[in-house]
Image 1: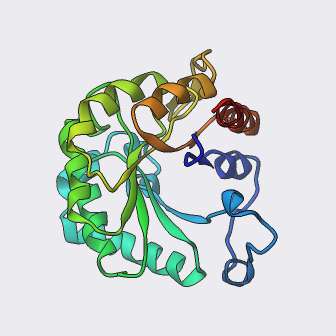
Image 2: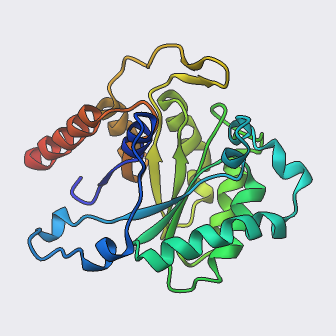
Length: 246
């Protein structure tokens, strides 16, 4: 349990929804020191690079249908400036997250080679227990990671927690052994472009789900949209209890 990393992909989303502007000043990144923190509590700053569809404001980031009319080069051109800015700001790694399609993932993995000193993780969004949001078989989509030496983690985010275990089980044989699973689902609610978040969160706590994912090899675990700081605190407490028991 001691090598499991905790992350919260939803906190900045909640702050932005409340009207805050979230920025990472390059001076802050460069001046931040870990000297007062034990090694086990080191904080890593990840800069988010999300799907092209989020720019369109039409909820297409949940389907990825825009890739059907875009080339790899067009996708790379869109993402290039984002990665360049984050690298210049001094983030520890790039979070290529909520990617709905294998094609956009391939574009990002190719683009990452232009920044050879940069590490990243890649996480897909998925529509069910077998497929990415665009419809590719997740078991095949994870093979994109074999084309990169810069990825430290691979997985999924912003999907219901109940689809995670089947997806990991199906894809474990195709994941590179030196790349860790990263998992940070949403609450289980569904986003509607007209009505906002709908439905109910899945009652099973995130910390309970996490035990399954750890058993399946997950090393980076957290929460995305509609998860809360208390969810992350409970997750951390569960891990501490497991460590103490061992």
